[in-house]
Image (tube, rainbow, N blue to C red; front, side, top):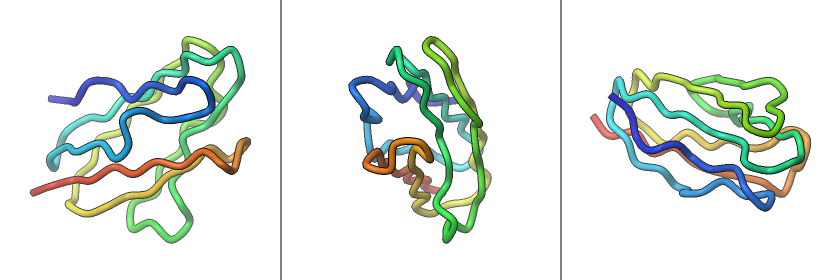
Length: 87
């Protein structure tokens, strides 16, 4: 099961934070004409990374533990988001 996709648009992730449960799949979709990434913060207990996402591309990740997991765009450092995972 998963949440509605996180939209990447106008150099922002929406919604953020996104609230899901353990074992949910989170999908991000790049709606910008610019390439972005979904990259976990280095300090995050769960590491994930999309690589480059061109316009229309998606990335999905299954969260298997509870907690708050911050992420960012490694290309555009002003872009940040958080996945909040409940048990």
